[in-house]
Image (cartoon, rainbow, N blue to C red; front, side):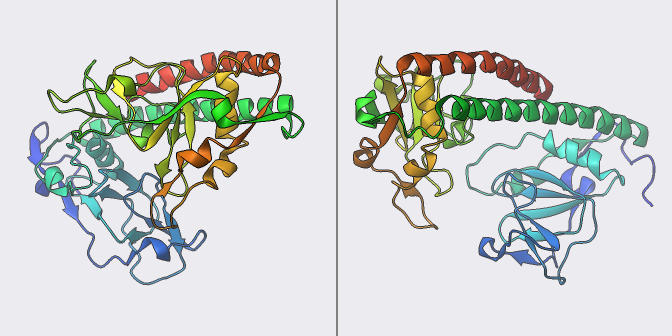
Length: 362
């Protein structure tokens, strides 16, 4: 049993005094060995808590709860059930100073680690120091932060419900779209162009400085301008490749699962470029931009993915020549605008929920 009051309470202590790395002996699985269902979870360094499963029984990590740190991704995970590890970049940690693993998970998540891209980050974590608290303070901190995480989860659930409401309204208003006029995408937009990808820094941009969007800015189906990379001081800005309100952005090159995802930009500070692996479209006046963005993101998503070239193991690419010929169903403009007005009302609720999330995260 660990002492109720850690040594050095109130001071900052080194990583080696705070954590033990206990990854040895744990069976590690490559991604092609994951199965969708199984007896035991596989935890890797990706964004999701559980990456896959296995029915194996040997090499299972049983000393839970434990903390998993992603060497390449900087992801920090709290794992409560016995698990296997992903093959690359997984560091399993146990606290030395108290049994309250949940507290030390929160403290690790709050520890700033510089983003080195796909380099390894564990060396930076080992150079960090950590503030100590007594047992009562640890318990109180965990209760408060877990309450905030619950509120964030509820707000995210509300946003997902609003997203589903918009999808349902689209189907309700337009059905299977087969009864409408069809027009090639090149006849619905005035511009389809790729962006620019100058050499960027690993860190996000600051303040109003120019930057470049990352693919993660659009891969969730919601435009997130905070997902960006900073330009080096004095870097040349491509004025013609800056994101503008009303742009539709589409991932022309991505993994097979995410290629073709698109979003409508409804708020930008106008000081950020889109990369060359993204198409930007300007919609013609006779087509509503909200309707077109939803048509591309939902009923036409499968058709867009089918245009991509690439193997299951490589990045897939959508040729512009094929995308421009994609047939778009066009209901009457008045009906498109009626749908857009509905989305605008839903967006107000979505904006409030997103603001709540950002405040809670801060």
